Length: 436
Image (tube, rainbow, N blue to C red; front, side, top):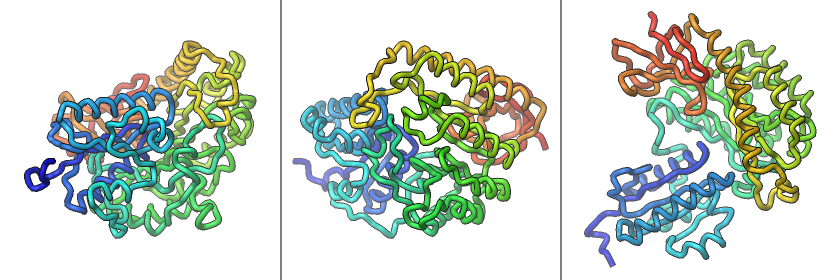
């Protein structure tokens, strides 16, 4: 047995899946560091001896990636490159019993809400006073802010409540403190994330408190952009829009996954909304916040989906002309209510439908981007790559949306805001030059 005095432990955290998982990994990193344990994230040097894999269990592809990553780490352990392999996150929460039996080489498995138990493996204490203290794995000018955990919705396709439990909101005071701490570290943009933003506050304040939270966060000095991800359309709290319109540092951007547009599909998916109601909501949002960027996510190939449903969805996209659209092929998940339905759309048909729908959106995106040529936008510089700068407008979130490619002889600082005149536009990206 290796004596601890010979070599200090170094922990590498590998994060798979969504930004909510990333925040969990950052919190774990912060706790380990506070306990004087050497910790890194996605370490390519391979100079660590312990690994924690934070898994995703959302859909088939994500599960496969998580399992392959665990197997890779087990192989490193077998070859003597690692002392310990720990697994946490959604896949571990959902399939722990099966995985333990299949991968006995893993030293310990943890669920999504077992951070104190992970720390015990390192003889570390959970430090409650480290509220919001995280080791950011994002560039220092932006960060995600998780405002709640879990979900009370009963969408028929979704396994997230099985892995994350019921909705639990964090208090406005705690979130403001965390935002202030992030700004102290140099963060200029925060992206609010949750399984479902619009439910925020119902459990602890007995009302939808997202508008109050937004006002409180908008008061944080030095916070230049606040961005909203993952809003639920049914019973959408319209007061959010009033705050968005009134406060300059709340981006005119809303990520609202709709999943489909055919009323029969929406009913089968248990989305608690019809196509007509969604249309009314979109018109209301755009009338209250002119120029708002609307992003949505869709599912192709849900059980029972017909060509007519797909045509309805394409018509809906052409009618409402969303700024950004992402699409998933339906994944048949155990213990969801949709699992009782026959998964009767073949994989290749799901894929073809997703492609067909994205081709409609690609054209819309190209036309919308062309309208931006000649306009000037405030752009946040994210990185420099191949001699050019890449940034985003307030209408673009990290990784999922447009980038603005900037050719500049003048040196620009990462995390700096600049005024950029758009000179060229493509399907999903823009080009421009710094002005002023």
